Image 1 (tube, rainbow, N blue to C red):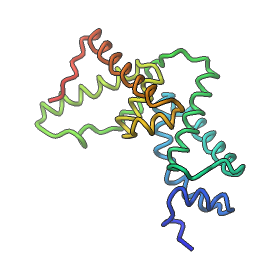
Image 2 (tube, rainbow, N blue to C red):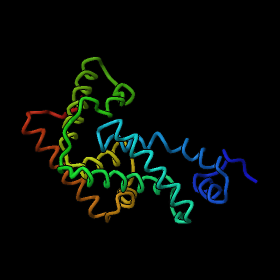
Image 3 (spheres, helix red, strand yellow):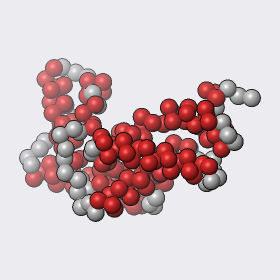
Image 4 (spheres, rainbow, N blue to C red):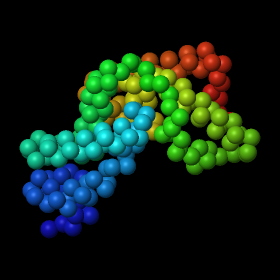
Amino acid sequence: MKDLHDMTDEELALSYVDGNNRAFDLLLERTKDRLFQYIQFVVRNKDIAEDIFQETFLKAIAKLNHGLYRPCGKFSGWMMRIAHNAVMDWFREQKSQNIIEPTKGNDLSNLNPKDILYGFAEAEYVNEQVLRDVRRIMDKLPPSQREVVFMRYYQELSFKEIAETTGVSINTALGRMRYAIINMRRIAKENNVVLNMM
């Protein structure tokens, strides 16, 4: 029998269904950071994100225990769909508007531009300012558009994966990205923000 650490996420999920609780502990360890980061990015509040994160895993456990998991795709994609649905449920409960107000604690602040940008001190300064401007502009997008931008550029998901995760067609995911880019350009223009990297 394979060691748990050598199993894929999909194999771990099936092992948990067969009664191995340690398999789920390892699944949680492997997926928790990415899921929490996604949830917090969308809801913009750490406490709410923690509640939704816990709800996501409770729903996943319930689905696994009721035999509702089929290893026909990546387990992480399955978990992202559950998280997405939990986030959307929270928005519905809040009767939220389509635009989320920016908060002081921008969860993208943990992205270190120095890891991805090279060059002289002046170029780094300009590039850091551009990234701060992009984050502020993203805060003004409707949640569905901000979510697609985050999944595409920060989680590097394909449009097919985004569509599967959010439960929409690929065309809808592409449309949301198109409108997000249009809106980001409009917001930048209205605020006289230049988004040229050096």
